[in-house]
Amino acid sequence: MSHVPDYGTPSPGAPTAAGAVPPAEQKAASSSLGDLVGDVAADLSMLMRQELELAKAEVRQSATRAGKGAGMYAGAGVAGHFVLLFLSLALWWALGYYFTGLGWSAVIVAVIWGIIAAVLAARAKKEMAAIKGLPRTTDTVKKIPEALKPSEEPR
Image (cartoon, rainbow, N blue to C red; front, side, top):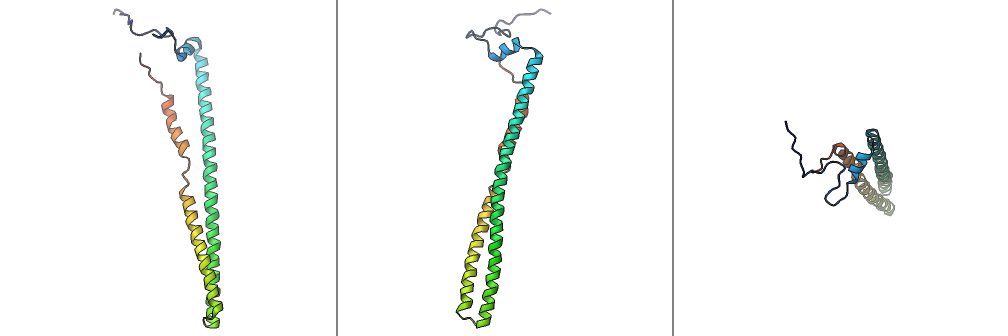
């Protein structure tokens, strides 16, 4: 079997048409296999640390939103308690005084607390719906296997 040289493809480490050797080829030609493997391990380690930091930041953000939503649910619960309290007082006063002025004033206060409870519950629902988990971490972690595949450069 005879070997026919391919004069159209430069050999590794040879200058390109522009006269410059790509940095990756220079590094490959001047470094040992152990150094290259060490660089890959260091890069993977750095990538994993960065992914962990991103995950921590996203968890903190989600926890903050969950805390706000939970606080608003608690506020809605307190407001709902006041609705029951004032409705009970209103019914008591109304039945006690046969619908005189004192009973209706308690109903007005109960209606106000009902509006406050509805607003807090709606805002809490909006905060809880805004929690997305770890979207950026999930996206970048999906890209790691692609980054580990060798890239084929055109020859």
